[in-house]
Length: 286
Ligand SMILES: C[S@@+](CC[C@H](N)C(=O)[O-])C[C@H]1O[C@@H](n2cnc3c(N)ncnc32)[C@H](O)[C@@H]1O
Image 1 (cartoon, rainbow, N blue to C red):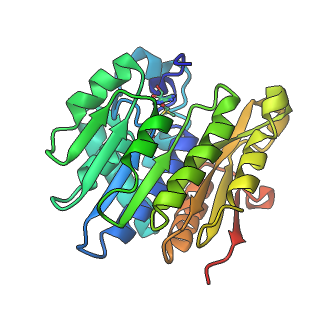
Image 2: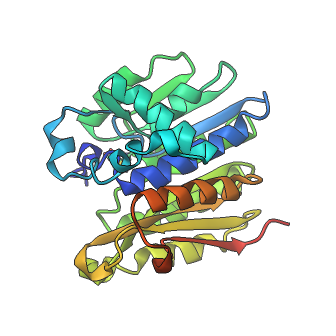
């Protein structure tokens, strides 16, 4: 189902969590010069124009990263500061950079980037964003294409999985795809975004929890999650926050993301009593 378009949601609170987490993992990979393979299964368009009517329509950008930008001079956390600097640089060129844009900026000569996107419009925009020789775009179903791409030649790497979750079958597709990929490429880090949905979402409300619980039992080295509950009154909204599940989470990436999100949550005006940032080691590192 391809009704979802990320331009309506670009730069919202979920993107803040997801893109900060992505940058923390990329910083870890950058510590060694050994090549890495990056796979973005749901790449989207890459760059989202700040002038697009769709981006302005729901005020998600305004209520998301724009709130943080007002405070960027006073930010103390290094990861949050780096993320905001990247957003400012993209804003100066008229867009907000999505996951694949962040990966493409980071990409070194020795690495490979595989970006998968099915939607025709998003794919066209994605293809024009990727200009490096070692960046590849595929207009394919991501679950089939992920299976075709793993294992890559390089042992180190990241698979970012960021589905729209509009269709409830996507939850089980993610479990199957990660399970299969991890069998073939156990040294990769798998970072999966998921929504936190209130009872308004009906039967979908519990599916993120179920998906996470199944995945932490896969034969991975460790499993860690972080959730950002941005809306204090869950009943008032459909999606009250979101989470990242990181399987084979690299050393100290958990603390880097947590510290950045604790500062970001304050700038979102969430009250600490509401415990907006919740983290959990489902399977602790050995
Ligand atoms: C949440 S958006 C991605 C946003 C992007 N990761 C970012 O952070 O900037 C999800 C994208 O997945 C695409 N998509 C949905 N199902 C897909 C599938 N089975 N295979 C490939 N792409 C798919 C949608 O068209 C949409 O662009």
